[in-house]
Image (cartoon, rainbow, N blue to C red; front, side, top):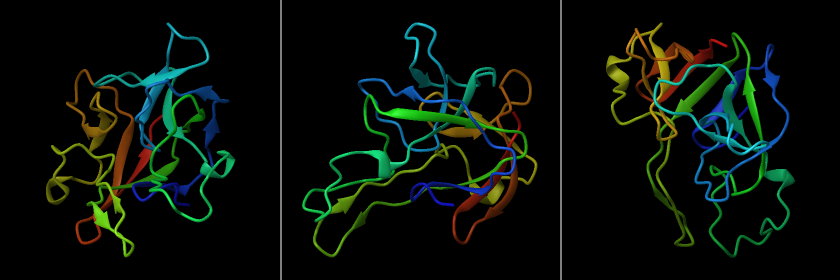
Length: 174
């Protein structure tokens, strides 16, 4: 199941949806970003810091079908990869839940609109060197990087890497 051009689920058998919390007023989150509960703003999530532990954490999910005012005639540029500010967001997790990530290049549409480049894998992640079984952790900017093996929280375990399509599949560890 695809939630955006950059993120989706492969298996949701053990998924846990932790209610609905709001994204911050200045949200520039992409769907699938690592988030944690925000203790200074009850009812809100915050972007996970680099190497964050998994307690109170999850991946931010927003379903655009619930957003009023979506332009049915596509007269303004819309990018459904992003989570709107102050929107109700679900934080999801679950041991063994399989997700996929893909970084995408910017794309000019036939009518001249441009969809910005995006993705959830840090620029430090080189697909050809990403091993099956590698651990991924938040990088602090809303993306995932390879965990350092000692102090980083291990959020995801890489299950497959397709260097041709750019798709990385991984399972959640919490």
